[in-house]
Length: 474
Image (cartoon, rainbow, N blue to C red; front, side, top):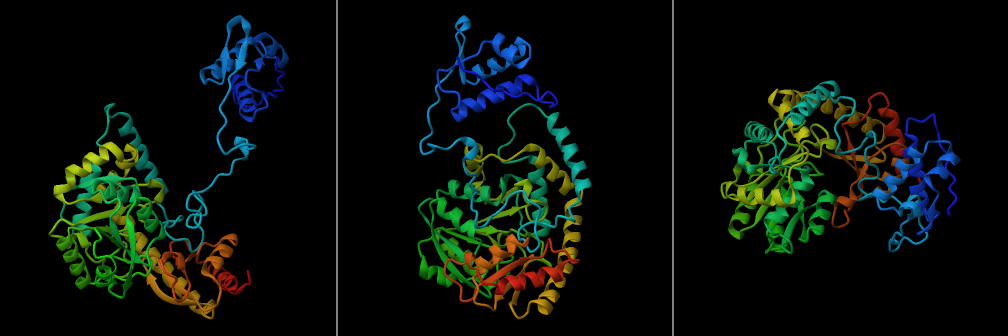
């Protein structure tokens, strides 16, 4: 019979039966309690631990329910054999590494944003109290809703609000039936590849462009061709020369990521003509929507599409919070049924409560007011950052452009931008290296500096520290 050493903490709120179960389970999973070992009887273990037999019985029954042990009645309870996991010999679950996905792009998840970090809204300016009220009300609505499968395309109210918003802010005329709610941009892109059967087909992608999207296209099975951009946006003629048989182009025409230029009208028309003439599709990544810090944002590419070739993707990640994991996809009317079928089978819309909250946020006017406040705040922070860079870091960092909610800089030193970014992260700063955004090595490495979470009280110190890190040896 196996002798168990179990320490109980009676001061804890955790029930004693749960503590006994957890201790035995840990022993089984670590191998300290071998397969086929006989556990002490309820009476013996209860006497050893100073608890009632009923407490031990509850712990044993849970082990049996989870198939960690088998009860043989009067013959006692024995531990079940558990198959070894291939490749994990010598490792216990407590010592397995937790490998973060895409660590070169996302070194941390769920952490408070750091100075210069890109892709996240201002932590200190989020309307927490308002959002909490909206979420509580949405949770009540969801809890009282009929118990049934929700529409896989997304909450009808949210789809109506998104369609109305796009008509006003982005110039897109669409029906709510053309709108699908997705798990962010990634969910929308995956839906596009599946619904249009683009696996194995050629895809144009901007060079430079967001590395995660380039990786996603490759993982989805498309043949990615990096097409250069210039002052007018994607070079359509270059794309035709490089990959004439491509069936997809993924572009950021509103504000090119990461360089910030707006695609010219001539290039937009050329891209639409190419898609129409070649039976190809265009994914418009409208990642910042109307969050243009200077002037009014250009209308969406989809607003010019008369041939039904553009699939428009937007998200609430940059405007509200990436924690929502909520985006939307607008498809041509004749594809709405096909996309709805694929969504129902493979990619239904995410949580109902969050969708309801965002729908209310839009309908009650909070969203547009929030965007106006963020535009003013981000513009002020960007100007403060530009002044500080010119005064404190001009010898090391050359400002090249302002792109959306970031400042594009080039390194005047011979340092690797990837190395500089890694050193900065260890120092509590989060600039993004520019070179990974290029499929081909850029002529000059650089850093992308997000403006949303800069702290003007410590901005001078942060700029000076960043400049020091850019010239430090490895």
